[in-house]
Amino acid sequence: MNNTAPSPMSAIATSSSGRGTGKSTSFALELQSMMFSLGDARRPLHETAVLVEDIVHTQLINLLQQAAEVSQLRGARVISAEDLLFLMRKDKKKLKRLLKYMFFRDYKSKIVKGIEEDDLLEDKFSSSSNVNKRQKIAQDFLHSIDQTGELLAMFEDDEIDDIKQERMERAERQTRMMDAAQYAEFCESRQLSFSKKASKFRDWLDCSSMEIKPNVIAMEILAYLAYETVAQLVDLALLVRQDMAPKAGDPFSHAISATFIQYHASAEPHLFGSSSGMKSSPDSPENTPPPTPTAPTSGPQHPGKNQSGTLGNGNVGQDSAKTKQRKRKKSTAACGIEAQSNAIQPSHIREAIRRYGHKIGPVSPFTSAYRRNGMTFLAC
Image (cartoon, rainbow, N blue to C red; front, side, top):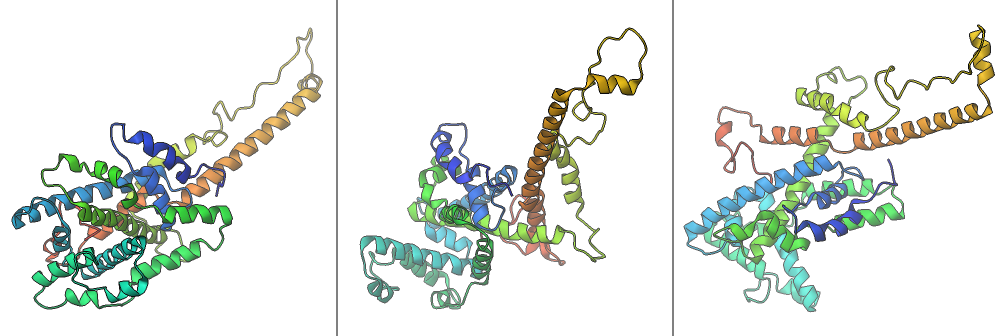
């Protein structure tokens, strides 16, 4: 992998200030760093990050539209945490993960205010408006809609999240072979989130044009759901990449997805066209050696003697320099191709979305309550 390539972290600081004044707001560079921290290659592909950004943006816009409809039914003037909790009520695992996130948000705010940790654990389910504000909102709302007690039981459930555990184990394996500089970059990438760029995130969702706008806590939940969507896309894409990797002795290794073959057939000229010295045609101008200069002669001479007499030490040195330059270009191109092969491809993301939205069974079109525009929601 090429370690001399510019880091996405260094490009974020220079681009985030000027992107707000452009035509549109983009999180492509931030997403590259997020994807690296979630298990992708050290230099994720830009086209993959753009595709992930488009998917996350589309899903959040649809989620905001449904939350606005729920808010109108409640007669509220803003989109609040209750509306998003209502949309997530059917997926118990993701709802439990969100409740834990809201608890740690309260935990962080109390640490910043200087409250002792012992007081925090004692006040975990306090009814005070100044203590555990997010937890109190969630608990009161779920109590109002919970008829079986399953939703309220999530507050007391301390079961280990298998998905979170798997991501932590993957991050640990990813950092085993890192040096100090790579590990520092990895730690910076893990700290990135949509909530740390609140104003940019609001502009990205175009909240100013909405009639019913989300409040502060709703924006925190949306930022969390956006990051979880990215994480789930990377999880699924890594599984797809593992399935598509050829395995020795596997009789079904030739049965690769048609979309995967079609994408790589169209992407190969783009990948190999930018690197010189790797032309497929041997008769191309770049692969054809330059003609040997000949001195004017008065009579016929033997071709071998003519070439040996015209070639000098200078030409030999030029040929050796050109040979070294071609080898250097080939090695650089090979490193770039190897880095791209290790990174998540856009075809992996598309295949992951296709597999996630595919339902098996006679009532499969009616099993998803969040299906809209042909795509199922990843966050809820």
